[in-house]
Amino acid sequence: MEHLFGGNWTTNKIERVRKYLAAYMQIMKNRPFNVAYIDAFAGTGYVNTKQKMIQTLFPEFAESEVRDFIKGSARTALEIQPPFNKYIFIEKNKKHFAELEKLKTDFPNLAERIKPINADANDYIIDLCNKNWTNNRAVMFLDPYGMQVNWKTIEAIARTQAIDLWILFPLGVAVNRLLKRNGDIRPGRKKRLDAIFGDSGWYDAFYKKDDNPNLFSFMDSEKDEKNTLWKKTANFKSIGEYYNKRLASVFPKVAPNPLPLLSSSNNPLYLLCFAAANPRAADTAVRIARDILKNP
Image 1 (tube, one colour):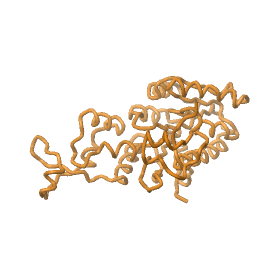
Image 2 (cartoon, one colour):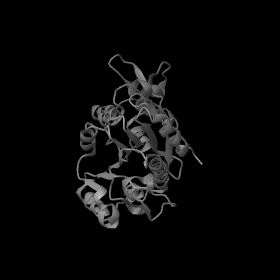
Image 3 (cartoon, one colour):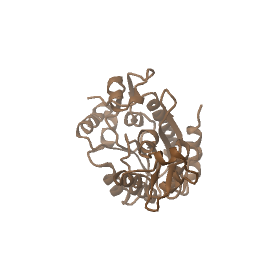
Image 4 (cartoon, one colour):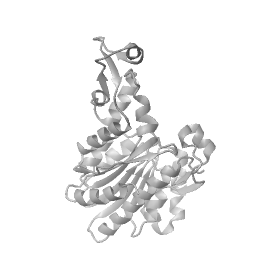
């Protein structure tokens, strides 16, 4: 079964990560570390961009320029030379996990290094990050469809002081859609936003008191218990900046220019972010990532 998801923005995302992996392994090839590539929400290693399925999932993914078949991040990592010492691919979906196991057949020379994991990515990553990382280094790619990555997972990665993290933040496909203009966000959705941002400060960052209400303000704003009107002031740019600042609160350094991945109509879908957990290598890592993230 092929994994039905993605568009030309997916090609863009994978190519940026590929460039970093290639540069990373050139730096690490003579270093005395066990080096791993970790791909959470790895899918099947392939991304099949059939438009009918894409349109069912998200209408904005039904783009005329999507390719019929492109490489997924798992296969891209397996083609990097020199190779990593270990490849960890985490996928909760059993069908997708079964396809990941076939990577051992497709890459027989790396079969002993490939470790597919059928587990919840957040739980597995936290457990993995709590191990001793003194002699280990890794690049991790968190590529969820939506808001599956919890902030506790991000904190665990940062604590290793050993992992370079690429993460796809669901800017347009999930987060912005939950931020209603009138500030009336259901408790369950607020809890989910708290989990992805790691705090509840996002509300004050994204909403302001409406000090000059008019008829439309009363129709389009939410009153709190003090009868105060609130309105959304956040846009794609400010939401992305807030998330990048949250990353910077736990990582030694983050790339200052996360890349918006756009649909064919120029609507932001995701934000590709980079953070370095190793304080000694953070400057070099971010310098490379910053250049890769630049728009052509």
